[in-house]
Length: 191
Image 1 (cartoon, rainbow, N blue to C red):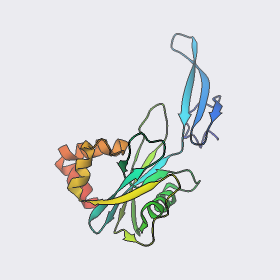
Image 2: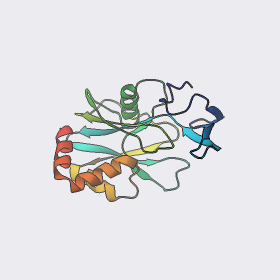
Image 3: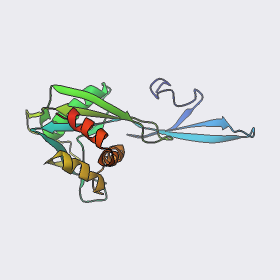
Image 4: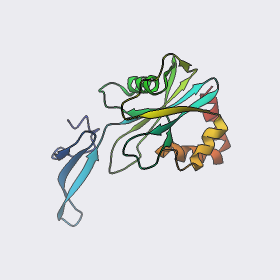
């Protein structure tokens, strides 16, 4: 992995000390303010893509089960790891189609989030409007997904649901609940 692939977040003398299926750990010596040095570490992982997908005026939410997740099931936006080597726009279109059977011709990159300072990766949030069912879902062997279709108000209320695994998006929903202008701007984006 080159420095460009890591987004320029690691010093050039960093060395990879572990490579797993998803995560890599990198280490390097760093000079401290008092002149001493310490070993620093960084965990690298592929970016993720998530979509706020709208079909017939409702937002698609997934109720998922996955091996290794402690809760029996959880709620999420459609999406996943962007680890196929293609652009995030292509990754999310593939994820939406595979997980839900829905597709859209009306896509927008809504925003990028960087949830962790010491764990650099990006969550690319997309909006897909006018989604239509075009095929049956084609789930990975480690996925069980049931679709829920929620109203805009129900989407906002998911920010209170501990089973909703949507990280930074939950924070955004909470802000929208307090900020009427932000909430209405987002509601318009979904139409």
